[in-house]
Length: 305
Image (tube, rainbow, N blue to C red; front, side, top):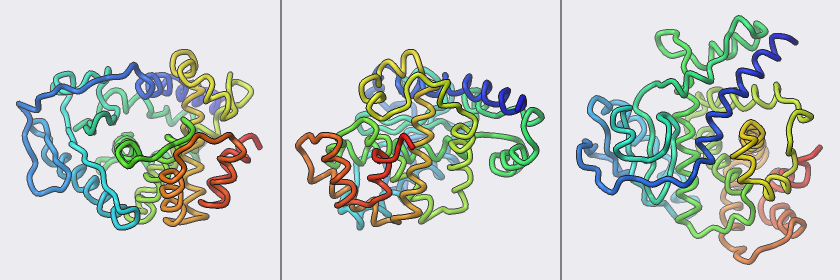
């Protein structure tokens, strides 16, 4: 138990940084891409810092694949410019405060080109963990040199951010703040499960760790309605609490895919595109149950169980 308490404390410190970034004051991108290299041969218009071509190729290909996967399913793809930036270039092309967090705004998706202190802050002290958990972390988050890195998780979060491009440009009405985040996680999980299933452990282990080591009694807010009412407050004063919500949406996205497959995402897209007028909680749950899938409706209906 003492080991898990130490691990939870470490996760909380890292989540403070993560959520402060996610809920940061609205940021902007520099208007010019002068000084960056353009990557040719991809559907996604991509620019990268000197020395980052290999990673730019990887991220551009993944963005291309995500959009190619979803276009025939929903008859839509967003227009996105991808920037793959070094630490030196980060502050030149985005006002996002810290290096390493994938983020999307106004048609531009920004990702880091290399490992960084922000990602490293999420690496737990393995000697303080139960052996089975330490083994899972080592197996899942080690690179080819057997060095622990959270790159595998944060590179995948770029798809979550791409999900926001889909719903922002696709004319969807999210109805709830939590649905905006859940939608992006469903898009992320569905793509990985269908196209790169070998990456599912990297996507799912970290959220599982946070959920398993967080006591609800330690949280200020736990319901979805409390999140809606206190969304900004959570970011300013309770970012660890918000991190718990985000990890639960990650977990829910996995359940939704397992139970409903790709069809659940397509039906969710159609429902959110069709329902423009605001609806109350009961009506929204009914729409999700009748027009999407029970597993999606269970997010609001069974959240507190």
